Length: 474
Image 1 (cartoon, rainbow, N blue to C red):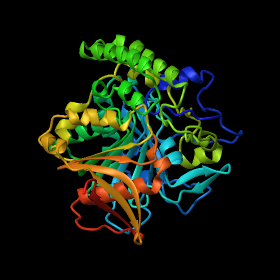
Image 2 (cartoon, rainbow, N blue to C red):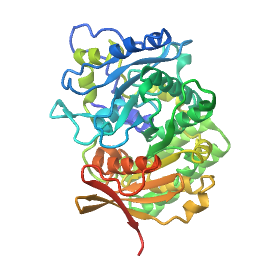
Image 3 (tube, helix red, strand yellow):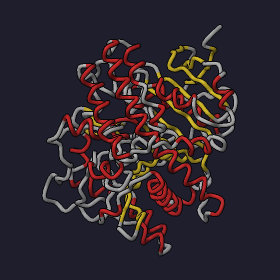
Image 4 (spheres, helix red, strand yellow):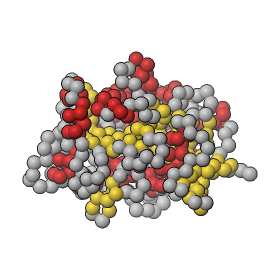
């Protein structure tokens, strides 16, 4: 069964592919075991036992260390979040702890693991090691978020999240329990990353950590946030008409009609008419796709789609289910219920949280050049209007060209602008899923950014690679 990942609006793919259902069929009659609930062990002080039980015996790659299981985030409704954690596999540089969150709302982060930046990928109908992955130098945690997504579940309809405050609280509960399970990691620099609708999840977790840290028993060493093609401030990320007209995908007649739909949706957001924004948003994206002849909203150039990734068929086998401790729970790579509970949240902004966070932590926004749904100019529209102490400095910052220098052979890979704790990047020849399209480029850029965010200065050389910035203008 194909996976149709929605990295921003589930509606667009549900409408196009209505026959798709959850991947919930175990592939043979063996017993896949029971889901591993770790919270009772942590509360009883049985930390080592919990850690031992969560160790993954991955049948294809037993040498790759990882841990998986569930943390209870709301006992009232028995809401539980699934995580899969990979310790850093190299000691080339200072390591950090990093969370990856998929978008949607309702998309499983295991898509990111297998299709974008995890240690494994599916090639030639088999698991294989990925050449470039984010667990090389980071302790990397994938979380199925919100509950209902992927393997995460709740036993009560009241357990589903309806806003980013609830999402932040659930993720915070998961992360604090994670650090209780792995206390040796607690003092390391901590980064939250994600793409698309995680442009809200990432700030939600960051803001919750920021507010709780001063009085928390489990303090988290938050250093920064990484947001790829992120949907964060919808009212300022809607100017599709200018963008699509300027790259030639619509004509001036369609541009004029699209402006009307954009303006209508903008007015509804200003009026906080959230129920009305749902249909207005559907009409907007219907018109965009119709005007472009159904060109992909995630990449306007022809390419092999990473959306049709077959990984759900592989993780649904008994051997994998046993290994990652999920039992016979239904796996939903795209959860429509989680989406439905959050559909009134889609047009709400988290810009005020970002404004506060950027005064204390480094924040990286990166965008792929060929994305439409969260195109680079739309992100810049939002950042230019963001209120923070260095906003004037950002507006006047010099744009730089990022070169990847590999043993004195250089490639122009991105355009970069920085102002105090804000960094924004345009990644060349990449779509909505940048890590899938340009894995070496984005990982090198993120390592460079992460190390500079934690105080390392000068050239940073890793395996012969270093990032060099040069002015965009002579």
